Amino acid sequence: MDKRFDKLPDDMKVAILALEELHNIPESMALPVVLGVANLAAQAHYDVDSGKYGTRPISLFLLSMAATGGRKTTTFKELMVGIQDFLEQKRDELKDEDLRYNLEKKKFEREERQWLKDCEDPLNLVPPPMPQRPAPMETADYTINKGTLNGLVDTLKSQSFVGLFSSEGGEFFNSHSFQGGKNEISRAVEMSASLTSMWDGTEITKTTGMERVKLFNRRVNMLFLLQTETVESMLNNPIFSEQGFVHRILITQSPKYNNKEWENSEEADAWEAKIRQSLKGFHKKTRALISRKLTLKPNKPFELEPIVIQQTKESKQIYVDFYNANLNRSSGDLKNFAGFAERLHEHAIRIAGTLAAFEGKTEITREIALCSLDLIDFFIEQRLSLELGIQNINPIQTQGTSKLAQWFEQHPQWRGTHRELRQVNTWFGKLSQEQREALLNELILDETITAEQELAANGRTKVTYALSTEQAKIEEILEKIA
Image 1: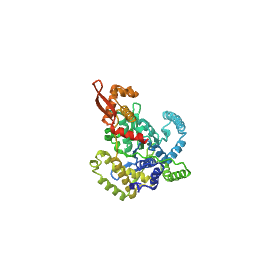
Image 2: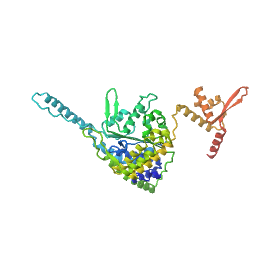
Image 3: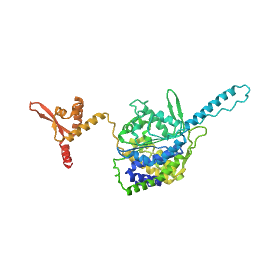
Image 4: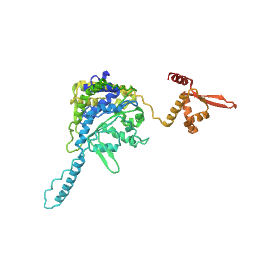
């Protein structure tokens, strides 16, 4: 295990090791999931004192990228057991919530009519007390994996917090809510601006032609596991960086890794059961934490009044030293991530608040402070090593190029003209002249094939295409091995 994880709470370290043992999950994916699940359980109950710029939420935005088949859904399921138990309990508790609300609403309407009559009675010299409105209908959709800004705001009308959680987060960033082209008032910009406000803990607003909504003191965190390709366009979009949305996300990227083989034996089954048994401590803590009764502002439904986690004198000095040591990183090694560099301290104290809450503490100790800085160092390393491409502006042509390259590789001895290629390759022959030339030119530039001018029997010049010599040799060797 990475030495920077040594100071993590024991149950978190066990969870990271369990994911590795069960599914070969790398630490770059395991850590965000462990932190994200713990943060979902804690964010509604605690804020943290920054020591410099007031009280801050502890909500985290986490994004972990991995290749296809990276066991992302499996990883989620292993660590969400405590949260899922809580969600099932809440759904059961609220199964008659709509009936309760409708009955109380009808009672209120009757009392309201009577109150109006009493107010109009000249014999009533003292105004009667106003009837009490019914408590708003409560929901328990504490994890949602996709949707619109309107849907997210509507969810927070009837509950205090929510986690944007998905093991297929590409659906979220590629939904129509996160697409918008160049128009600065697009849905995508509106969504990212709103998510930025949610991370900051400021008021959440929604304005339509039908209504204007303002919500206060809600909490939203994020944990998405996804393929790099599904989020490249968002991470490369300068609008989202300028808004500050991307800088509020802790991002990791995992290399391609192999899944563990399935061993069908009683010993293997017993070993897996033992590993999952070790996760009970993590599940117990997350279940207990998220199940705690929320502290709400008086007479303000669903408005949170979290406990503020304080810093000890020693931990505050650790953060002062860290803050000062990183003042100029936005113009140094993190100049390409300047907005992220300027938020290193806040990321650190949010992580520390999550760790303290997970351990049942109301202050950041020296050990927790040092742990949070180790984790920030890990996330900085991940940020600096991100490998992001750019969005493919012509995926159909890319697919065609790949398919034509595959055909040449399957026919390493073939050599012929454009017309002859159309005759032997049916799908290629059906393309337009422009498309055929574009695919061939791209393969020539990639040096996958060669194009040579030759003198035909009729005295005219012709161009013949063939798999490049180097590639042809490779294909011949592979064919012999097979």
